[in-house]
Each structure stands twice: as structure tokens, then as C-alpha cells.
Length: 128
Image 1 (cartoon, rainbow, N blue to C red):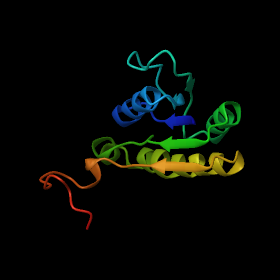
Image 2: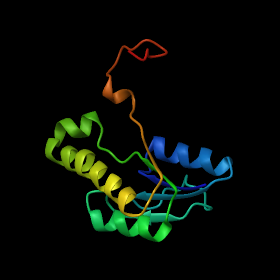
Image 3: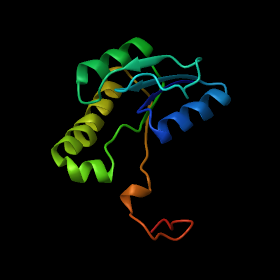
Image 4: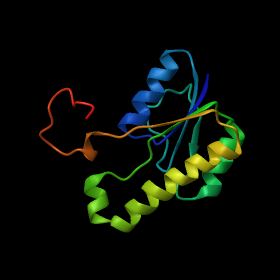
């Protein structure tokens, strides 16, 4: 399977590594320079989810079957810079979905972290 992981934070890098280990073709897209922890087998595209053209160009070039969308500003950053958080989290997600629609990506995976729920959660966190 050909996969594009959008966002090279903890979730993105660990997902990319797991997918590579499972034998999938994996590329990563992120704003920061290529992380040292990213295996060399994974192509790296540098760009911002807030710039639709950069993400569209990556998806058009790489042609993934599945897109994992993990690019986001989390709670602490978002509270300090709410407008930036809105642009990254909302517009970035819209750009990822639009890129998937335009270039026939068959599945978009979206995940969140414990940052959504806050501290003092039971382990495991119940579905409800």
C-alpha cells in the first residue's frame, strides 16, 4: 500500500515507522526539516498544510492510496496562538481532505491524542 503521512510529530513518525516495518511504501509531509528519526526509505516532502498548493502538489506527485493526517497545533500552542491553531487544525484538515478528493486517495485516516481529553483519564479511556 502507498501511504502519505501528513505531520512528522510523535504520532506521524511512529505511524510511518510501523507502516514501513509492515512493508508499505510510505512518504511523509511536514513543515519542519526532515527528522533524523525518519527512516531513509521514506521520501520526505517539506511544506505546510496551511498552503493548499504545497499539500496538493505533494499528493499529486506521490499519489498515495491512503493519507494519514496528523498535522496539528496541540493544546498549549493553540492556547497561546488560537488563530494559528485554527488555521493549522481546521484549514489544514480541509486541505488534506480536498487533496484526497482531487487525487482519488481512497482513504483518509485522522487521529487525535490525549491532548483532546486533558489529564486524569482512566487507562484505558472508555469509548463513551
